[in-house]
Length: 308
Image (tube, rainbow, N blue to C red):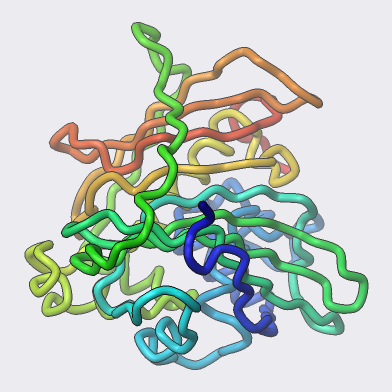
């Protein structure tokens, strides 16, 4: 039995970005001054950080602040009750990089293609909406990236839909010391900077939404933790070279609060295909609570960061 809404395609939407957007993203997720190819537009190897495609479904073509709630709830999925996206949080994301984005979309036409993989009823806790989003060159049809992700709509289950398949887990190897560690110190303004990329969910800017959802106040974007972990992983193992990251995924296990310290432990798994090695990781806060689980990536291993 297929899931209600499975295969439904949302209307395609144009996406665009400027070099300034690329610079802002790199700054907001923790790229450092010895990675100038992400932070300086005149660097001879100026590049888009490879996880940038994840922000484009939020940003689209806008350079101004947008109404997050209105945009998220604009399209009804057939066969599924109307869902309140104001009570939604991220579940997990898996990005596959097929081709690097150019530093600016100027002179080109790109679009977001977004289809439903499945909608799953988890009972009283809520509903999961799983989608696949692709960034595509409109003129050539070439796909630059694919992102399979899920959103969890808190308290909106119990409508009789399927529970959905069990997710595949990628735990770290038992008893093995991490091959690399990456630490990020957040502050009270971390989410305020990250949201300028185009993800203007009020949950990450003011305490009231988080209080209503049971989080006790403001929480940092799950995708900030996700992206900042990707920065550390690529820096530690891939020489900070964007071409060395093919896949990156993680599950959002628990909220991150402003001021939390995030530590990502990274393990090489040893299996290599087409030059890319499987890597697994877990990110925890200062209380040893897991905030990103199921971490897995495909990385071309070259060692610690190098100046491109």
